[in-house]
Length: 148
Image (tube, rainbow, N blue to C red; front, side):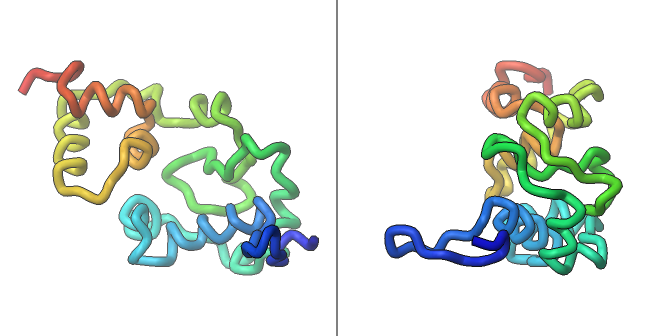
C-alpha cells in the first residue's frame, strides 16, 4: 500500500497512519466545522503550502516511528511546517507542551468557561492548556484551583 492509498480491510476503508495524520492536521486548520478548529485554524495556525500535498508532507516527515507517535508541533504558536513538526510519543509531547508555564487561576477560570460552553473534551482542554487530562478533570471538579 502506498502511504496515501486507501485500502480495504474486512470491508472497511483504511488509510496509512501517516495519511490519517496529514488529513487530521489539515482538518484542524482548514475546516471550520472541525471540533478543534478554534484552537488551530481559528487561532491562525496554518499548514504550509508544500504540505497541501500529501507526498511532500511524507517526504519531509517520513514514516511514523511507531503507532504510539503522533504529529507534534514543537512550538505550539507556530504553523505546521517541516521546521516545526516531529513525530512524538507521549513522553516527548509532554516535554513540548507549554506545561512549563504554571496554571494560574485566570487560566483555570478560562478552562472552566470553555468547558461550560460545551463541545470540548478533556483531551481538547489538556492540549490547549498544556496540561494532563487528569489535571483538567481536577480543575473542572474544583479539586485544584478551586478558589474563585
